[in-house]
Length: 401
View 1: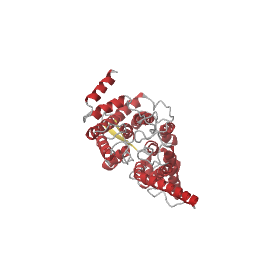
View 2: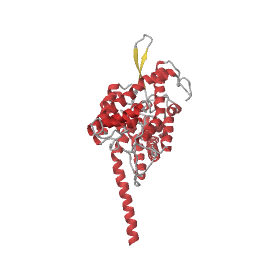
View 3: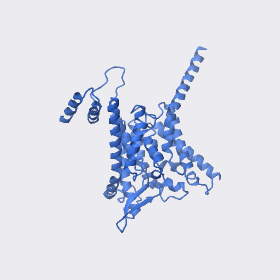
View 4: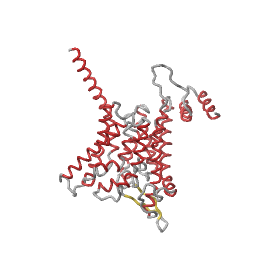
């Protein structure tokens, strides 16, 4: 009660001043706001923006923890200190040594993401004089999960600053942005520092050799191997459970699927977008498989590796599952109409696999596909609404004729 009362006193002291949003933000973050709706025209519910954001973070925590274990496991696997795991419950994976090394790599990414992003949001709130919103709570968690574990912290800080300012604040803040902020940050990293985000060697370990000096050990990702027409050394179970190199939170399809079910159950994530994106990806993969089976594309082609991959395997490699569940369903940047959600999700899945196959230099298309469809989401909704208006006008004319 003492802290709450002190914050309340500070709010009253600085009420009406420029710095007031700073204290209001801390007070709202730590405690529930006192303001509630009273009029009969308002829709009343038990959730608010903070609860919604916290629900998404709860769905992301398993991916974060798994990413830490996987970072340590990939490190020890590359140095030959552990054997390759064959079971999801293997002790070689779930041990404190893996968690410790992974935490040393991943937690600084989380800290930098939140510190830089929230600092910029606080500054904008003070400058503009509006209340602090909890929109960055999810973005701050998403960003560390979609970048390579070895990304330099200063690069992440620069990218977060760019994404928050250009991708969000210039449009008016939370709820006004037209592009997903987390993907805007990742797109900036890809185009500004492509060698760190190339997609073929993204997992670099700081290993110590027998001489006691540090070596850099790079591990090929699934997509990197397939883009070079190489046969990956990972089984389907490795890909599904997540025992493969990749960005921090994108490797375990199992945990992402559980997160999707949780978001659907809590009605935070839209199932129409998720399901239609899967159908779109399977359709594009099936088309590529048909082209390969017809002999149009041969093994000498640079596209053969990813084109010949069974369509359903595209769902469990790379960042496709993570992007579809946690970013394509962003309620601000996605389509708002039910029919529009089906179209929006299908095109994300379809375009994701197309970019993945035809751009070997960057064999992961879900980021670009979602950003592209973020731009077209208002147009999709416009034509869906106009189509409904025309149908109603036709029915009206038929009744009055």
